[in-house]
Length: 287
Image: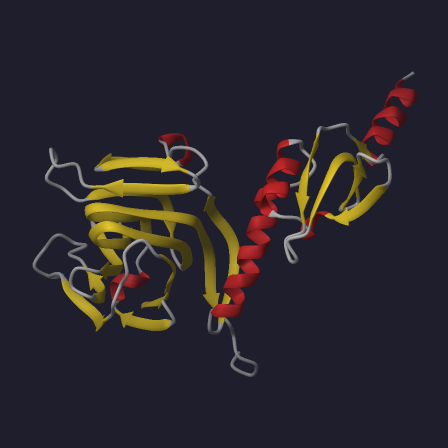
């Protein structure tokens, strides 16, 4: 009897996944071509779709649109989170100079409100989540910048997240240490510049706030900007709007206790966040 149960379980695990779902429009990501069909089977990365007239078509799941992948994920036939992580890793590796990405530490598509259950704290400012966007702005009653912070031990990392200004005078992608605020990257539409700040992370006269770098930069409102913030060793490297900026300081090499988004003034939004362990590639013959 036990052997029969084990055999039945193995058959269930190895067999194709047969489904019956409603007729819906499927879209090929690359071409935009659509097909009105019902999902009949998912097997080995292929989806079998049946037209209303009867014929079936097999399609590669990864060739489908994001909406289709979300739908398949909801049915349990596709690991959307893993797919997004793999695509992001490939995208980042193509852009980064001499960097090797390690473990994915955190990924957030902002499909629901951030909370302490996922390590987030947002005690200052007014924050909301809608359509995959985390939006923050100052609360006039608090007289303090808005801050949404993900708490976790971090060292050498790469952060990817898009940002959009909707009236905000400035935002920061900021790391903190146990002692206090460290720094990262500040974007200031009001002053038409970007800044790499070092903040007073020891809260003493030994580490006064300073700029490790700055540059003039026109920043548009209501436009999405991809931002990559790289903290490896004692160097911050920022990829922003086609430019690369760097600043060097011992504070960068410190153990970090959190990463966060800081918003001054009116609204700014963020999306597609991922945080990766990272290291510099070892050149051949350098060992």
